[in-house]
Image 1 (tube, one colour):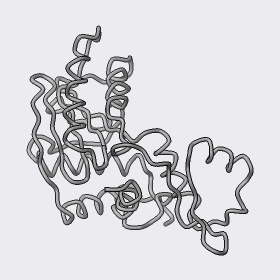
Image 2 (cartoon, rainbow, N blue to C red):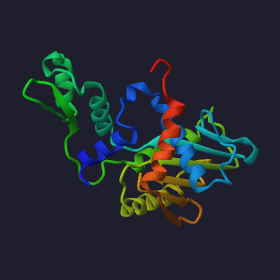
Image 3 (cartoon, rainbow, N blue to C red):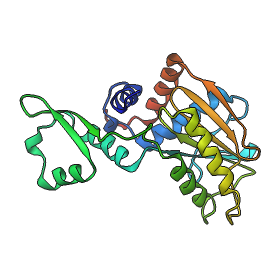
Image 4 (cartoon, rainbow, N blue to C red):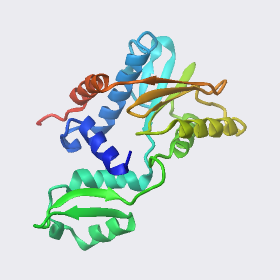
Length: 232
């Protein structure tokens, strides 16, 4: 799947509306909570959105941190897609144009100079960096202020990640076991919008469970409702 199709498909998951109408943080966390409830209803019954970690079930002593894994310049490009689509190219400041060039973000405009879509430069693979996302959140798990549970899990949004990349992350997790850290994650969930991979960090085994369009739509609708900003 091309990156352009992936971007538009992700945009479609949001119902085609501007993300500016949503609290993106709440949307992502509620989406993750609904995914976990879909695949593990008994385990995650009673899960609430909180902070550090983002999803908590105090009665079951389980915490889940939620994060994305897109490369920084891809995230920047997606943000510009939301901000600039439909605007006149001539309305952009010189500073904005310079930054877009620096980040290798390309604009496509129509005959009247209106921006139709914004795309980061092509990348090999899916454009995700799950290793960096895992490392960043593992360091957060070991910092003061992060509540530690009996079971501590990580939920990674990794749009269109392939199974070989999941296996590469498992090898990375295995190598990381030898670092001098007090706490480690028990499970890592990788959500690709096609399936949910569940990695056991103890024995490094993993499972994959598919999710279809109708299930995604139900999850998306609930997450959108939870994250819709008042006034829209």
